[in-house]
Image 1 (cartoon, rainbow, N blue to C red):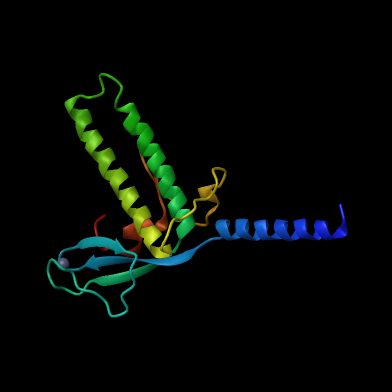
Image 2: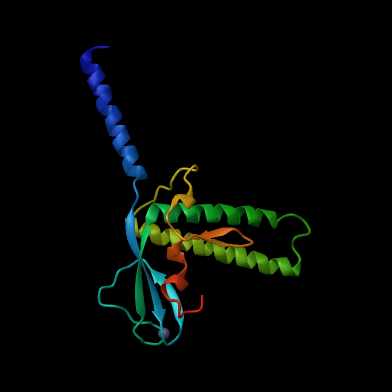
Length: 172
Ligand SMILES: [Zn+2]
């Protein structure tokens, strides 16, 4: 190998490393929790509105609380939640599971799954494109964060998804 081709390979290596680093870099953003003091309703938005906003249902000005998020971490945890829900949903197909009580359980799993998908859609809105999750060996407990586990399902909620942390007066 001549010196020159070694240099070319080195450059390609460095470019690959740079691209890899960019893919794995944290993405910092904000999500806003909205609380209507009149309706006591809570929702979140990924869209920033510097002049505030009005609750469509009642015309009241809503209280806002911005929460810093790391998009890639939020996305990865949400994907893991979805995987967990898929497994549980598969479990409900076992014969004998489909009793009237269990049917209610399926509705709940579907609602939770829809919420995860919606959350990821909002995260994609923030970056205006697909979000690449962290690899499988990434540990969400490495985050300096108060993760909440929803038992018995085992879903994990980041701080951004625990509205009572941001609006303690709201019932969650
Ligand atoms: Zn309202």
